[in-house]
Image (spheres, rainbow over the protein chains, first blue to last red):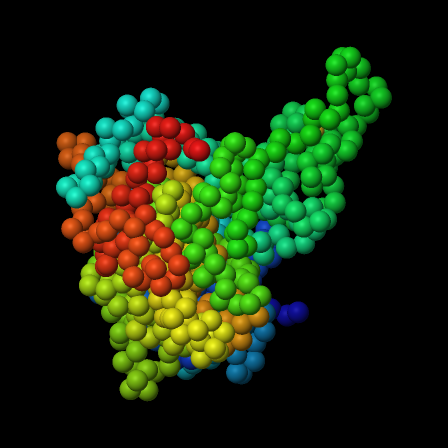
Length: 167
Length: 439
Ligand code: FES
Ligand SMILES: [Fe+2]
């Protein structure tokens, strides 16, 4: 299959922009990347190699099928009412292996790999999650918007906290 | 550890004060005694029936420090063993769960069956074992396993009392939990494991702590209110319907159930938004109005000492834990649901579960952060005592009217969910186990 280098570069830059907004905690700009009717999904694992792919019958770690639910999580950070979110971890997201799996005028399906490093101030400790991003992007002006972000975390023992900014 | 090294750490003067010394959360000697007497001397929750439903299914886990395997034989009977080969100790069952007629040790190939009997020793004919060698001496080392209402417990201590005696008053609530469906309960696929800084006893306290709810979970409760308002104004969709318990400072209650088991209950304002609440009318028809109210309308969090809580409130969760050190704890959580519930209820239950529980939800990370903060505070040894006196004046021994109405005979009853007197039951058991050993 011929590789669309131009599109791959544009999509990569878009994913890196999202990662950077998370690291810089620019939540409002981050939210703007998402469609109103979006899905942010982190499935749970059932067994060594079995991922829970049926969210209506199986557990997800995070399943937010409306932008308002993403806003809830941002609100929680800004509210000052959640003690787990007062000393936010210092994060650095690495995104790589970006590949266009399907592209049309309507949508672009993208797979990528990530490692999201967290320095936790309370615990004086470094934790990280790594795994896969599966995006459904919609073309929007000269950029994109996020219709779906599915995150497969491969090291799924959670050290105290897993939120949208952790992956 | 001698009884006198334990007893001074709890001051128990009924009607006057109940204090614990914070060294119980930090002292490595206490931790070691807890592993021996509580985690390896008593019954420990290990799994639910639905996690090993078929003949020859097995499930591996830890009891205290010790690796164990729980198996079901072809007659449906449960067995449990130390998960270590009797040859040179290699862990035999390596996966979390599986199904196998025989277990062949991956190291030198000895073969066992799910009843723990040794079937084959490789090259026995050329082994030149000494004359006293008996193959049957090499069966797997059994532990005690039993189940109640679908909940499976194990004990390293084969002299431990019968499970039903151990469960005491908790049985009333285990029955109530499992009767949500005539077909019983099932663990839904998708296990999450999380770790946190903080002694394991904070897990055993916090899940039955009504007092922290509106402070630690202020963000969750405020969001729940905002979402309800938003949905009422039809300004946005709300597929989750966050659950709103009533004020634990003034309502609900708690019970000490015997042998360290404790529970809290609080009425839920919007209980008809719950998975079982959606089926409320048919539930009333099946179990009657009063029991239906307890089952669907009332948050119940039942801690079965020392390592599991049955949550039936925000959603339905099994949460169990094991200590990793005096300062670190590992928690395993599952969503548990009535078998055969309608798709709409199942989906609602899952969304509410993910919303609140687990280290990826909107509530649990805040609890875990408090455990971390307490654990640090406990090292402030110059300030060593804390009390569980809240509610002492209204706390009564034996049953109150609510308990009697469901056939419960608790050790003690309290009239508000936020009262801290239920911890007396927990810590009296703690002292008893550490100073006398398990029954
Ligand atoms: S350790 Fe199992 S056969 Fe040798
Ligand atoms: Fe809590």
